[in-house]
Amino acid sequence: MGKRSGTEVFRITGARQGLADDVRGRQRRYIISMSVRTVSVVLAATLWNIERHVAVVGLALGVLLPYVAVVIANAGRENAPSLPSTFVPVPMRPALGAAPAEPAPEPGASGRAGEPRPAD
Image (cartoon, rainbow, N blue to C red):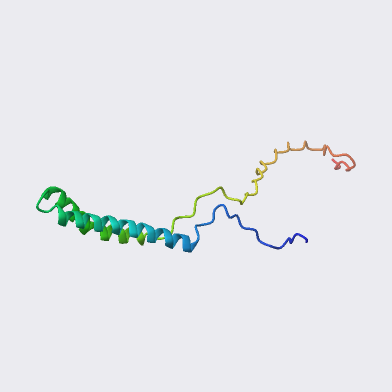
C-alpha cells in the first residue's frame, strides 16, 4: 500500500463536535431546565399558603425558565477551538540596501585594466 502524494490531510484535533452529539447535548440542557421549572411550579403551588416568599420565587422561576431554556437550547454549535495554524509562512528575505556610490573617476585615468586611455 503506497502513500498518495496528492491527498489532502486534515487535522482532527481542531474538529467540532459531531452534529448528533451537539443536538443530544442541547436536548439534555433543555430537559434539565424544564425539569427545574416543573419542580419550581409544583413547589410554588404547594407552598403558596405556607411559605409565600418561597412560592413567589418558585413562580418567578417557572415563568422565566422557559425563555432561558429555549435561548440556551438554540444557542447553536460551539466555536471551533483556536489551535496554532499548520500553515508556516515563508520567511521574508531582507531587502538589499542601496549600492554604495562609486567615486567619480579622475579625468584622464579610467582606473580599469585593459581599456585604452583617452587621448589628451
